[in-house]
Image (tube, rainbow, N blue to C red; front, side, top):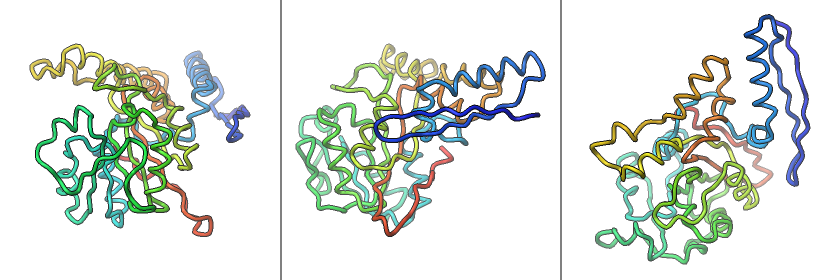
Length: 291
């Protein structure tokens, strides 16, 4: 059909963006409804502020283990990993099975509930003050940070120091709470734009933001206290199912569908990169199209 377009200019203190929305003309009542819905969603300021960080391919929920696995397969030279907020140190075994040659290090504060559950001692886990990482500049290829930053008292300062200990071109792969209820001494929940702000202001190049479990799943899980007998009830993404039904009816593309899921996510999963020196001129690939 004939393609129509609209151009929007969106300005904030860091950048100016031009958004071009191209949608087919209305040739039926149903087509007009679809066009109006697509237009209204893509015209939302929330969508405009996040559109460059939404994936246009996969629309399934993600978790950090699948995320980091895909990254390591795509980047086989990433052989030094820091688990930031490692807790009991459980990811050590995960990485050892995935890539035995990877050098794993863990760091956490002394008095987190997860650290208190740690059994035994490990020379590859160190304690820090929650801000200043006890490593030299450019020590790691990857920082893995699974559901940690919402428990950090000074996340801006910690993320800035995480940039320091990453090698140029290194990746930060993490997840945070968004619409998840209070848990395990959590302090701040991150909005999608909160991730954008904290990481870009620290000097990272944010690659993408994706949805983890939906908010309703995490609410039901907490109400039922992770009951094993009731796992069949709480281990479901009910909100995402409704969004998929709406997307099918309205023929929404993956980016718009992902935006709606991100809006109602309990967890947000994301990746960011420390820029390399300007003369090297590499780009920020979206290496995580499969979750």
